[in-house]
Length: 345
Image 1 (spheres, one colour):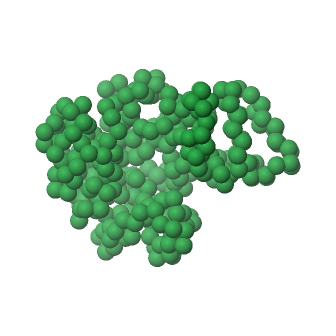
Image 2: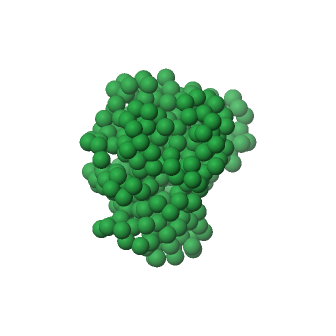
Image 3: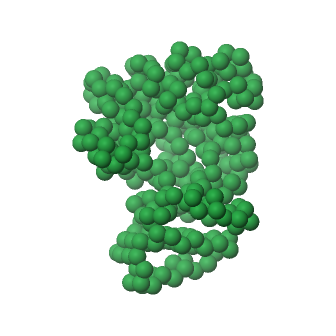
């Protein structure tokens, strides 16, 4: 393989589950949820030892291009690619593969990650990416990194490993969509892995598998391999897992155990932020007494909690949200009922 792989960072979406902090103009990946800088910058810092900026592509919404370029001044401006419309991860990663082939040839190794993850063990994360890239080049396979589960989680998809290929690398027997809680426990006990969305492959190999198995995107490649707007207009939305990986016989998995979290809700921050002695996960100017297990995010104000447990409190831009850690996992039901002037401020 080449000296360094390319890395594609998926950075679209709004992240409505982090309202009121997250908005269309300032989505989850541009928020300082885990450190003093954005999650996207945290991601780029983790990737710096894997792929140089010249070999890192950011795929995002057209409305976020300028904000991302400001957030990542070290990245060549042309490496921030605006998707004309949402068309699913199969189309996004296929277009990224076409771009990498144009710049570096079909044998270039391509990693895919998301911009809004928390990673506890950065060195272990990098090692897993490098191992996946090496396996993809050596086996000419589509390789995914499956996370060793910490607990049964019905909110995630699962991977059932099959036959051993070499060392920890195994063929994928099947992918399993988000199960019930009881089924998730069975899958964990059976040795299944969380489907992280970390992928590695040679760019040309992905295009071959798209052509063979994913007509939803293959037709757009055949008709518009260089015209991005026309390509995304012609592509039918589908996830890469469903459109390619579940249909291909060239998919392999390598296990990863580096404290990965997709940080899907405010509640998840209780597991990935630094916590105080009472299990609270604060950010900003927060004062607490006789308070336990709370997630608090204060921007431009002071939040005081007294005698309460297991709350989520977010105060920003003139709006304060107070809910429980249980109800914070489904903010969409709340947002659908709020006036636009409150929801979109």
